[in-house]
Length: 336
Image (cartoon, rainbow, N blue to C red; front, side, top):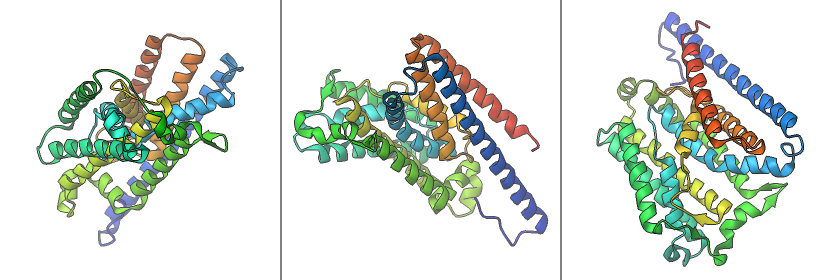
């Protein structure tokens, strides 16, 4: 929790304030380090591909790609800070996109398609949360099962075919093609999700409870927090973000497909870890997660521009994840 008990003796109060101050300084240092890494990657891009990297079209492409994974990353940040893990986010996005682009759903128009995607994602997230909070399942196992089941259901519904967004539902495609101040609308949707996520995590009781549940579930329970209900809501929030991401991927690709979101769960979790969120829960920030995501997205862009092998890209990402975890463990042991 963020508030320090004023009735406690002066010594414990000072220790609590000092601990919180150290965490805040570590967070600020990490954010500066992530910004520096982004600047370094930009310099690499300008040196290796000056004619392509700094163009407006390439920068918009980076932001558009980051938007889809970014919305999922916001939901994953909440779940991991709350002490959980969600491996099903990519599959849930695929399922939501397929369900929203069936001919039966498209017959009702774009608004119903958007609502359908959001409801499917949220409903699947609620099921995850129920299995974990009330079914006492380990989050890794529950969400792994959901990942497999959701991907299989998406394949069955689409008959393993790509479903096109019909011309009558061009409102969804407009989210990607319509630009305001040079940026597509989906980038603004992503920014709105990030803003709302930051406000909820840092300015509401829900956010404080998320940190409390992730930091020490038993202490949170003794403090009067319904840990099971809160866990259920965290996974529902993650599912909601998957539904929104499904709308964005439909806008970008004009399709719904069971192959959408492949390995997105790994990208989202990696971005959260690089951003400084503890895998054990109780500590993390939305801003750090988004900076981590942008680093991953720019790396992907640089590999594409330089024509490097996809396998090498995966190796580089894996090395970055390992380095981030080792740095995280070292910072936790630091007496600073």
